[in-house]
Image (cartoon, rainbow, N blue to C red):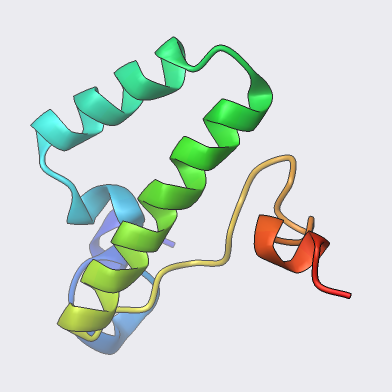
Length: 82
């Protein structure tokens, strides 16, 4: 899929990075680097993903599915629900 297809309307999913300013991307990278544990990094990533989902929803944009090594892992709130 070409880069042009990632932009605009209902043509398909848009990367979350397109919903962030350059300053926000830098701040996120710094937060991830400063996180001391994998759990802290995961919390930062989950919070960022939630914000990007909100922005995408407000703009009528679909984000691609979650990526990364824990993409299929249950969300923290789902782990403790019994």
